[in-house]
Image (cartoon, helix red, strand yellow):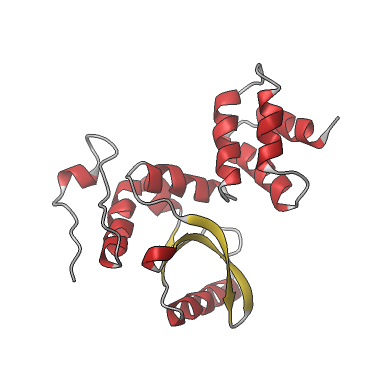
Length: 194
């Protein structure tokens, strides 16, 4: 069995989108395969279970999404509310060496770090995050941190906040409502202040 076939079989047997994303991103992060090869294999298997959402998972993996939290931010905050598309897993130099920014809006000098449980549970991890934020600030990049609540429970409010920071740092757009109950459609429009 080829690796891509095995990865897709595992993804198709996953019970949640998060599990499938984890399998696909792990295989790609370890450089065993690429999202492009997985997508090509998916095209050869038109009857694969969960094919539609597997396709979207692989597209997200190709864009640099590496966790369920990052997927939630991309789908529920960024795309659903018309925010500009950030670059993902951007390699940056810091005083402590190379770091990777979860989402970077380079033109605006804004980074979004998505803090799930893994890698953020110990005091040392939090201190390292603070060092990264200070390094970014010294380079003119503002770091916003979001977690599960902001991405899954309150994506509309998070889009308002991120959109506000982006507009104050040069983005000429504005977040759009994701539906009739979205807080963006309820509250006053966000305007840049200069």
